[in-house]
Length: 477
Image (tube, rainbow, N blue to C red; front, top):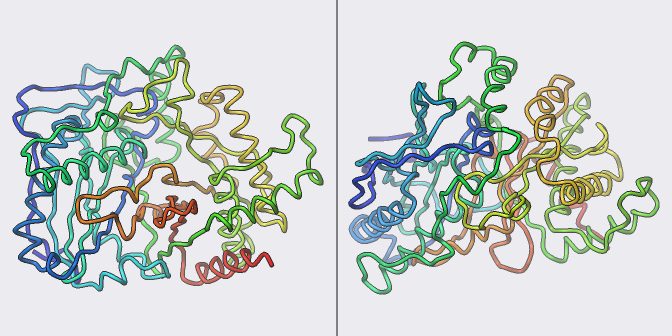
């Protein structure tokens, strides 16, 4: 069966955990409810193979069976991921339910596209990466939690594409699942064990009781979903319990996808430039000039200002921008929760920038300062400060006022380039779903030198402008 011109599907199967006979249900927390209708997070891990191992016979007879069996073993530890999101009629909120014989959709595919073209950083057609990402099923009555596609590039390598439901997994959790799968796959190859044990730090904690909700935010979010959806998506009105994911269509027409690198030296130069301007602009005595700035602050400020200026130069009427980012709450809650908690534990915040800050001459400084001060405020006042007001209502208001609202997906702390299934580290890790909004994908540099990678999808003309701004801005001497 052919998926499109460059993909051939060899097999579509359901991978089930071994010997799971018990029905398991897990409630949602307020962190999960917030993301209930959000589009899937889609990532591709691409691996090169030596010629002998990238031959179709090796791929289908050796590599795929090991990936299948290790995936099944991994699901034994991550049982809820094989289940579904449902919303029982007697329940106030949706739940995750695993029943025996539930499993994960797995596509085994082959592509005739040049592997080097797929993993290159320079701009290439945005639609290409979507060939290697599986669909995540959602209907009125249920929603799948993950789906996976393994694609062979003959004589070159293979990719693993994964789509994840944001109401069940945040970035840290989805990365943890991939690392657990890779670890078990590696162990099977190395030791020939049929059922190797998982490292303690990769064992997920599904206990929802560790998340305290004294203000009943879960009830508030569930009750307000109808109102939020009816405002943002009028067509959804009257179907309050539908588990259909809302359509945030990818922007693919006349669009290209590219990855840009900021080395540790680049980040140091940007940091010195930002800090040198701090005293001249500082009107907020609450937060004095910092000693240093994180890679996150510097990367977001630099990349998003280039993004905004490129959009503005292409269309002068687009000049107002804002930025919202999520922050990991695991260590910031009272009491803190274990780092291996599996589920959503991130919260979104908007920075307190002025509408035109992103396109001003000193935009990088202004935006960096706003991000830094917001993080400082979060650390001092608590991560859930403004939890209700700083959510969908704020987003809706900004959109109605003509703002472009930027987001960020991923983190340079996830260590995605450490995900080795036994055939070496990835040649490229890409967050495909950045094409669904004004979002940048964020990861550590694959060479491990302390730099970062930024991925984005833009109209061809806007990408040319972005590339020029991004590269010229790094000519510090």
